[in-house]
Structures are given as C-alpha cells and as structure tokens.
Amino acid sequence: MTFRATILTLYPDMFPGPLGHSLAGRALGEGIWSLDAVNIRDFATDKHRSVDDTPAGGGAGMVMRADVVAAALDSVAADVPRIAMTPRGAPLTQARVEDLARANQIIVACGRYEGIDARVAEYYRGAGVEVVEFSIGDYVLNGGEVAAMVLTEA
Image (cartoon, rainbow, N blue to C red; front, top):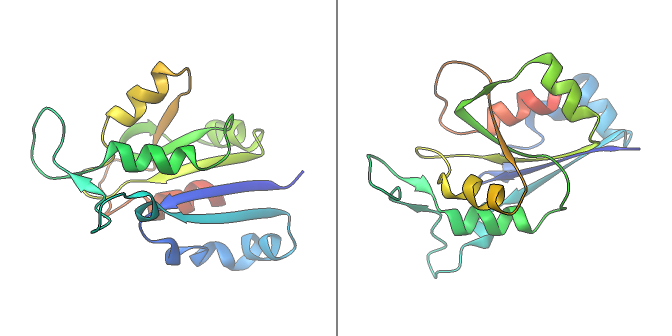
C-alpha cells in the first residue's frame, strides 16, 4: 500500500520542495508514496479569502480561522491521523513517526501567524476525532511547512 501525505498549507508551492530530491524524491517518483498539497485559502468564504482572525478570548497576534481550517480538514479523507505542526505540540520522536507510518496516510495542517485557532482541535475532539499537535523543537518557525517536511521525510 502506498503511503499518502496530505499537507494543508497557505503555501502549496513549497511542496514537494526538499521532499522531491534524494531518496524521498526517488520514492515519490516511483509511486512508493504520494504527496498532496492543499491550499487552505481555497476554503475561505469571503471575497478577500481571509484566513486569519484575532484569537477567541483575546490575546496578541492573529490565528488561522477555525472555520477555514476545519473546512480544509473536512475536505480530505476521514479516519486518518490529523496532525497540526505547532511549537506547543508534543515532541516528534522516532516512535511517534513509526506509529504514524503504520496509518499509511496522514493529514498535516501547517499553521501560520500565531498558530491555528484552538477551537479546531476542540471541535474535532467533540466529534471523537483527535487533531494531534507535534513540534519539531523548542523554537518558533514562520509556519508549519518546514516542520511538515521534517515529519513527512521521517
């Protein structure tokens, strides 16, 4: 069975990026695994295709809108691990990567701004579906795309 990674991002042109080279690139070319990059902005419903908003409950900065991210998540296959790459997530370890690889498919949401509105995880948790947050280290990146590449290559 082919492993499939679906990346939800505001920057789909960043993919496959480094994943298109070396062994990962060769495996991608041979169909051993597949990669879909989905533009989250395509799920915005206003005329400006807005994806950011102030955090519910206040706070500094902007977060990715819950309705837009949820619509993007709902557009892809169900019953597969849904992952958000965030600096506050559980550390990504080899054991966790091996667990994810057994699923044969992952959906990775790449945050931007101050991250993804926390109501997304709450909504799915209430529906019995977990959005697992992973971090690749104790530092902040501009977005989750590089972290998603690390996870996918691992």
